[in-house]
Amino acid sequence: MLGDVLLITEKHQKAGAIIIDHILKNKWDKYMVAISGESGSGKTELAHVIAKGLRKHGIMAKPIHIDNYYRILPLERTEWRKNHGIENVVGYEEYDWDMIYKNIDDFKNGRVSTMPCVDLVTEQIDKLITDFNGIDMLIIDGLYAIKTEGIDLRVFIELTYHETKKAQAVRGKEPQNEYRMAVLEQEHKMVKALKPSADILITKEYMVE
Image 1 (cartoon, rainbow, N blue to C red):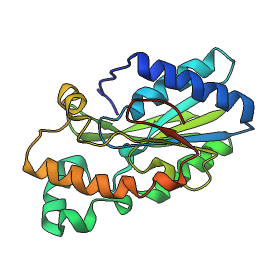
Image 2 (tube, rainbow, N blue to C red):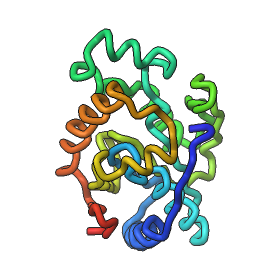
Image 3 (cartoon, rainbow, N blue to C red):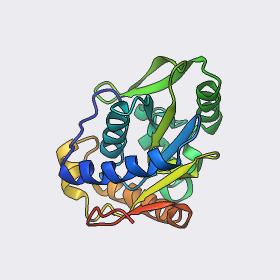
Image 4 (spheres, rainbow, N blue to C red):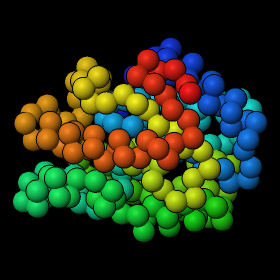
């Protein structure tokens, strides 16, 4: 997301180093990593650390923030969710999976691809043109990223929105009001259901298991 704030700390660096070591021992051509967790759990920070770390090993890994792929535009999403019922619509189906898989296919075939990119200042959707030629790996992060088909390594961060309130406030992407709390609770239920499919767990203490 354009204008996103990264809060990279020592815990992200340590967890990233362990995951990088795992990737180096197990990767193959056009490898895909997915990182899921609740809002403020450090998904984007971890993706950034891993991608930057892999560069030192000659591997070009491109982070993709899957929360850019919501079907409903940011400026319209709050009203749309309220009208349709947060408990009914907040979840996996809010993503434009067709676009996600189109971009993944472009990655696998080394094509130039157009991807959505949310500007957090204007809340508009910009278009990001990426040349996947020479990109060795995708690191996909987002609430439901490990639900993506064809992922080679699924990482799940166990922190819930209850433990990440401070990080959410510092990043300030959305106001913390009754509506936002209801969304976070529904996301919590949906994200939690993905935990059993993870290959690597990062505990609430940010230890890698």
